[in-house]
Image (cartoon, rainbow, N blue to C red; front, side, top):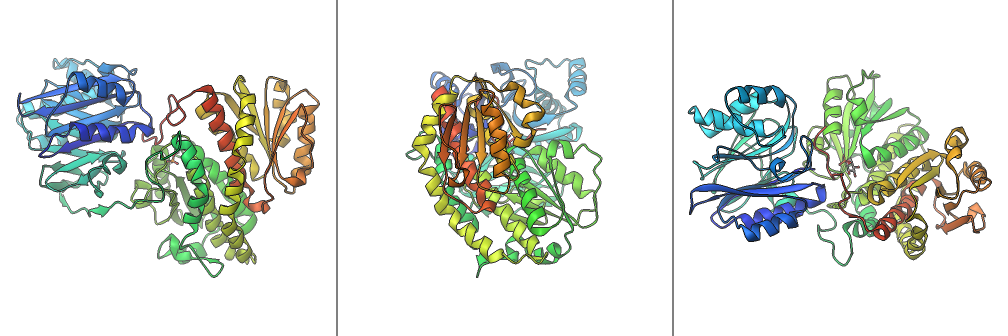
Length: 609
Ligand code: G6P
């Protein structure tokens, strides 16, 4: 999704902006641009390109933009196609330049108003109205700060904005509502970005702007006003580098690196969270125990992969804690007339903590009588964490591949810790055993990763296929859904997942030799039933790709390829069985030659609705 970088310094900042954009590439985008104020010409100049940041870099070689003040952007098209004229920064009268993340919902009315006054538009974006509104206000005599404040008062929707003015090259303005924005604090130089990762090459000290904040940033000073125009004091936070760094190391792709980090990540999620075989309650926050005592029901809300983790957690919470648990995708939850039962704990799950739908669902829920709000998240200081009563960090470190892998398994571990805390209140007696199981997970992950060559070989069967069906039952059904999501995201092969028991109610009609069936079948109480479902597939000429353990007792043959996983405690199977499915999707994508880390049309962090 769109990325913002800005800088004001005593040195030339265009290389810093470019490096920042490269660090944001993982978020997904389709064009990029930069605007810089040149002290030599006293003008704002810009370069925009469709495609990768490398295209912009080539453009900057032909047309360098040296200067001490500038803003840059990677755009993920929402209003208007990926074309250079739609890329940011957007300029008004060569005086005001802005970059914007988010969506301005009332831009049509604003555009009509501006056109009536003689403003011309060169793009199809919603953003261009903002740059003209700011220009209109400064042209009428407002200060830049006033102009921005007046402008945002007119806006409906979400925005993170960075603004520069050719006539005031000693400052850069930043404001946000609904989209994240941080200030990177340097020594006699300051920066802004939509994600701290973009600036780690220049600083590790950040101010996380709050909703409605407006910051006036100069080389040596940062002044912030809150949404009511009062001076605000915002803490400077030291960036906590989680496990894993944001570079590929020896791996060909970030995704593969992140798959291989999972044993370490699992150890990391558990670190400091367990004492003498018990999950520590204070890891959720200081008032956690009191809140957990009152939980009678759980509502989980999330998107994408995080939603799939939530579905696994429902099985765990209902089985171990004996309380009802509902799970819903955030984009549905936020617009439904939901009914909140007394004693319901509202849990959001999110890798980024900035997903617009999840954040809005949380805000909607806060209008109701939920008992409390817990977020399971990978980014400390993210909006979701800041707006929740309790939080549990997944400590997975930066995840760069758009297709989520280590974030998913770390969420599952964190959700298991949550389920155990709730189960304790239900007289659950096997917590110690469960904790011991969790502590063995990392080693089991290593064993599964050793299956890499066999999975790589299996992937060859999928390359020329157009459709795939994934099957699982019970807690493994959401794992199958996640496996199908991985495959479709990065290989562009249509993949659907079904609870295996539903096969005969429709998808069986699709089964033939051109549609591989991936079945995920760890040993559990549903294994026999699942194996019977698979026979229905074999009887119809379908080719099966089975992930199972030694208990499955099936023989591979022409119509069945088998990957045998180590025996795992039933309850831990969703975590372990996710890994071979990630590897399968990865190798199919590599064989197909797709852009594994940045698949087409997708974004890492979806900060618009
Ligand atoms: C995007 C990403 C997915 C992710 C989803 C939710 O669609 O491509 O990988 O699962 O957003 O993101 P979150 O940060 O809230 O977990």
